[in-house]
Length: 199
Image (cartoon, rainbow, N blue to C red; front, side, top):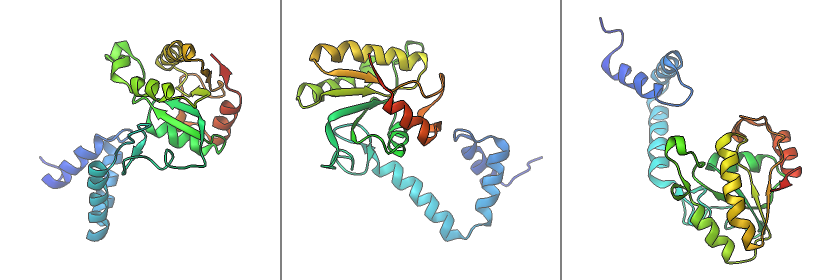
């Protein structure tokens, strides 16, 4: 016996694919959408399609943008002498929420993880080194999550960057080991950034 109409069952199935959404949450979301006016549901669907079709990596730092360069790279008030290296674009949002960092960013697109088949060539490490070789950068702050892959990536980057004569630091471990930047509160991120140490 089929519990839901086919379109509703398909919607629940698609919602379950979202991270952190289980069967019950997917059902609640689907029934919520059924109760909304058609124009609101259409606006949500259009926003999802638009973000997938227009958002792309920044040509400079690989942060997400809908233009050639992201707003941070285009902001002349940012300190171009510092580059904060993060694993994912969502980590930029976490760092910015601290209000303590005013430099530029570089998004790697992941972490080195041999178990998952992710090596240095799969990340945007080459473009980072090209940016650094252009000069003007005095410090690279590595803000990878304090997990095995984050530590390995930090050490790998440090070995590549130090010979360029650039100071390499890592944010302090004010973040819990095994935690993610995007789940940390603003104060924790701010303290971790202020207490960073040289690698």
